[in-house]
Length: 67
Length: 441
Image 1 (tube, each protein chain N blue to C red):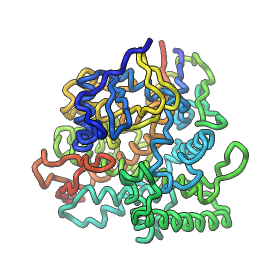
Image 2: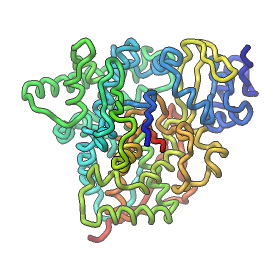
Image 3: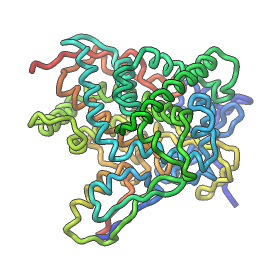
Image 4: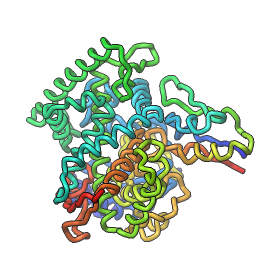
């Protein structure tokens, strides 16, 4: 599984970080919206359910998963 | 060499398409798309506009940087309402920082608090309805959402002690949102005089709460707390005037849009009883153990959410979103010159038959379109409505309570419920009457 994020769409709502802190963090971005930061681009399979909760929970549909 | 932008027919000298546009804006814009395709030019009182429709054109509109498509010039009518140095009356850099502070109040951490606050408000509100009767839901939802937004923004204490004065001041601000305000918001008109007085008084009220809170040192889970404690990148905090402005702006963004959507949600439930039965079944399962309307319970209601998203497709509360071209804007083979206005219309976007087959049919099981920019009820891209998650959460909290506690039926023939296109924004045409009956425990 590979995680992709589209930073044009991110407003830092932080649902991803709440659902799956192993993979997502949100950092301040001086002068703009906070932005998601992917901590592991290819997380282990055991995290898939949590990652998918983050994908579905994101209000701006920032995150997508390949594979 | 760029191609000329297709132009809509029927332009008149001086007024352009204004007459047709003002009679029925959604119908006119749909005609522009049908005649011109994804990109089409029309003219309002001499000002050229370009409608960008279809998922790809909508995406280009949403993704354009602020330096190319600017927001501020399109919002000048609300500057005196939000106040000097707030949002669209400041530099792009400040605007971005204030929007960031605004979104901080709508982040996941605050949202958990709001779910409970909203559920409590809904219960208090409906307790005053009694056992059965007839209501105009346009008016009911306008009041309910004013209470919920006041609670979430200014805090439960303020809401509890909220006076008629506050509602009246807020109304004075609303009544200043008239067409002429977007041409010159400083004309000597009674609406504008009342607006300026109301803005000063609201500023005083907020300043008072801020001072009290700073003195007490207590932390709160509302937007005011977030705004009071936020800092700009230079380390300074927002002034009470700026805090007031951001609170008003947040309230304005969410009030009519949410109440209109709540009204349509109820009407569509009653027009589509088979879907209502499905959603009620889902609610019964989620709340089987008598659980609270918590944030977590709210997340686990995909059917109610799908229903609300279909309501937003059919009745997007903002039918057009406007930007001003600050630097020549290229889209495919076209070049839209500086000074033009470019428009994205959720009203048009959601009725494109190639994207949403049988667009006039209400269907909560419609598959979500693959293109991310096909469904644009909240806009999209960097300036997507930052309150989108809050809005959905609020609607879920309202309907979880209403559908569990009451039975409703339409008073008037179901096709008679319709939108009012005569104002600055699209809204449900009042009254929208329903009969209610409280369920037996």
